[in-house]
Image (tube, rainbow, N blue to C red):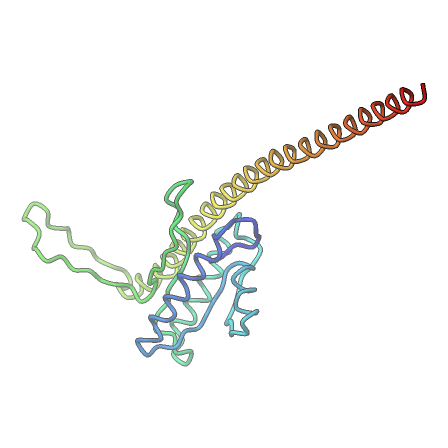
Length: 220
């Protein structure tokens, strides 16, 4: 997930570097990587290097909507559930928003889901009640999986949008500060040049007056 616009400092380049690290890691494990990209900067990055892109979505990086997340999620789930595509894992690389000063490129595995079982049995008072699923637990999970993936993608899009805004504000502040320093520097240089020019003109006038005075004195 990258930005659609520039002037955001190293925002897009940082997340692209994280994607490259993940790609190298997966290839080291003997896996092939198919790339899906959100944002014009990522599309331009891969097109410039003539590297294949399976699909891309652009025009929403600063104001993502759930419709975009649903579209991306449906495509990824379809690729994951279709056997002939060979998609065994789905990873998402985005920028997590920590604060206005800190944004962290993050890579997470979205699919398949990782089941973490507890190591200690719950106490008797903490036993969970039994549930009945209709029509079945498998069908309920199949119905919840798309919504889960879409919500996770929407979360990543929102995090990326907040990070992009913070990075752009910080970049613009840095550019403004640099411009102010340049204005002060060149104003000082211009004043020095103007003062030097005035001093030279005064010296020439004084020299001319003295020369004229000396000439008049010699004539007398």
